[in-house]
Image (cartoon, rainbow, N blue to C red; front, side):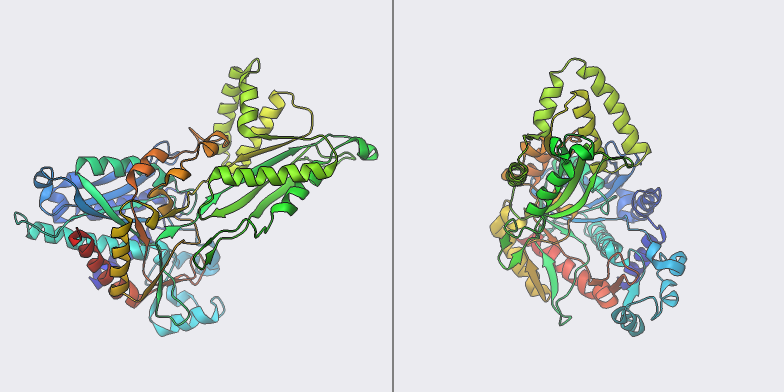
Length: 531
């Protein structure tokens, strides 16, 4: 098993599947070829494949493989076969931070010899000298965990062939799925929801648990591993302020949008009253990622518009609650100016535009330009959202002061396994994992993850988000109803790793090749056996 894990990891790393490049497809083909070489999938070729991500401009796919104890014919006679989902991603961030060592960053065998005390932190260099860690781009995030899951799937496939024809009591299905684009906008996971539903229905699968092989950190003593049973939510509120343009000498007759935006930022940036708690965990307050006037060049006049967008992380707050919070702060900021300024949501502006003469022609032209901005000029979702807001104001000849609020993608719903169906069973899984390995299980993974698309509580199915996100639909979407149906509880649990995305990215050799696979193997069988 150890050698197989290292072999798979070397192959995956060598693909150098940097997000939003053609090499993601090379990694997909490598994984698919690997599965098709296995005896099980030669016998059942229909049980592995690639699933094209709907509407993806780069034509990327999710790779999947399914192992069923007694083969296809037997399982089609059954109902509710307990199933575990191994999930992960095959894309990695770029190796630019490696500098002169970049040519070897994806070579598991060679990269260590090109790292030294000058390029690494003191801790990373100590780990390098110890020989207990494997270095290189993607070895930790998250190809190491993916390699373990692929090796275990192969092991289960061989056992299924060997035990063919037996009753296979206490056995279940194991589904592996690896998606592209986790490091960017989770296009792969959002686009794979139809695949999960199709496989569930076709093979009568009961998704009992998903294990995302996101690398795990350890507490300060270096023994207790941190596992998460939930993933934090993320929203990106966007604010566009239009003032009244005048020459600076007539300042009192004008409205400076920069001043209004500044008041909004000051009222919300770092506002700890917004933060939420769950046990001992506390979410972060709002953090503004971008603010600026939209004036092109310099002249002696006020800017007409200013805009910004803000990163918001949530535990339980819904998009409607986040919107209400910002609208309250916006109205307070506007009142302080002493000017008459309209506060409006995107859906209100949109409804006005739809009633305006010439809207259909305007929108058709806007759709074409929007596609060019996103697909050819590679503009970001927030950039295009602001552009679309401005285009709509211009179409309406909206010439008085206004603050316009909306959302830009991405949206990661906050999710907790304990809040999904079969919560009592999941509590038993938590106890079992704690008995298998020294772990502490926390409520929310603090960095966004694909696990946000494992399930969705009713309060997170937000019409407020859809209505106030200009790009929702053809440009950005996911099936909220499918998530509500799937409700797959999960652990974010992978091998012990350090320095994700940095030059010192590394995974612990013992954790990767022994501890993690052994714990995962036992957890897998425990989930299958539990009624």
